[in-house]
Length: 302
Ligand code: OGA
Ligand code: MN
Figure (spheres, rainbow, N blue to C red):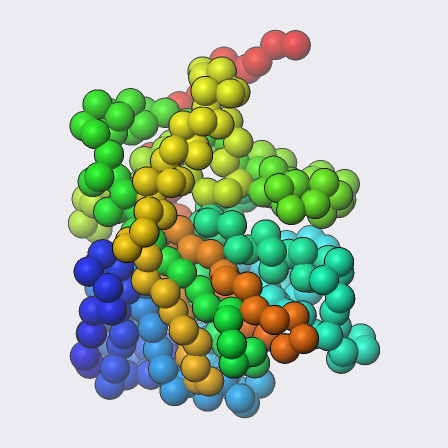
């Protein structure tokens, strides 16, 4: 197995082993897991992504080695299955959706810098995204290292954030695109979640800044101050030169560590199809979740 670094701060390409090898062999899994802990983004090329059922099976088998799989959220394509579908192809008509369509607006929301599932009651360890149809122009995915971000922050701010807790909400990030994008049913199913703003990796002790487009408030801080700080932290994280831009090719599958990175999709011409399928691995205490949870806090009284 070869591990080829793709950017000074984040991402490596894995060569010499396939995702099916990882699914079927514990030694290969351990080597790839070590590369994942070290590099936060792993790129696999030339996987059988044109063979629908086969790649679905490989993707689930691969992902399940890393931990329990999430099921796709309510009111999403793939709801209740391990597959989150990101597409601008209408599942019924097979035509391309118009720019006002829910799936097109969701694609826009994915173009905000974020980490997956920080709004869930169990956050995500990792996401595995396979390109099934690529538009040929645009539609790249960018990644920044939140370990590198953490290391760029002044020591005094790190000390403060290490013991600060931020609120994450799906409705908040969707609301930035369209006020009604998260339906009442989605809001009921996805109440806000509160997480420590520093995620310490239990394997290597490396710290990262845990924020996302979903972050809307910080415990004990006035809302306007918190919003300003979240915006400043996002700007530091995503300053020019820090992102690895993944230009998708047929056969690509990319995995990322949601504890230690942020990502965003890039726009593409909506008259071109783009169809991506994601599996997501929930984080467990072994991945550092216990420390992320707030110490029991006094209940807010009305
Ligand atoms: C995701 C995501 C961006 C993209 O799959 O979680 O944010 O480029 N994708 O499709
Ligand atoms: Mn995402």
